[in-house]
Image (cartoon, rainbow, N blue to C red; front, side):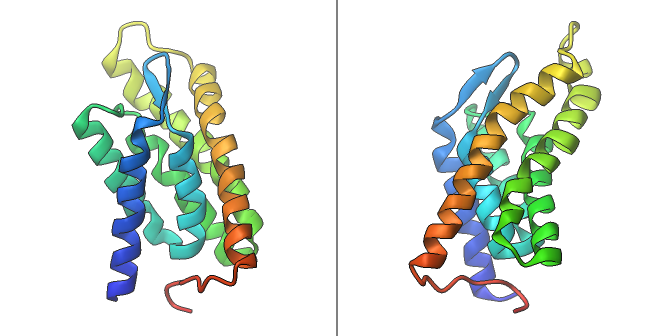
Length: 162
């Protein structure tokens, strides 16, 4: 692993943690649209390594009390889906698939595996899908536009293995 990739992982993890103060409480969860923006951008720039930066951000937010336990299943799957679909298509539109991982996998795991152990009256699967979608859809759209701006600005973008 090279130092540039490690730096990207650390920077995106730190950005996710630092922007954690911008959250919207929804029931037992806290939604972080900017984390999904970071997942969309980092999934394209770093590939599957973006999962590590999202887990760093989730750990810092949970440790400092700015995030909830739901960040652990809610964050990494969006970054993973973006990175895998970008690898297949080589198109920035893959950033818009972040909700597939976050809602489809992350929210489902939150509702079925975590919520029942935390509260007696666990919110429904539909609740988690809605709460996570309210966070990750605008975040993924913003991430897509940030990628477009970076590409038009001729910023040298790093992709591991390329």
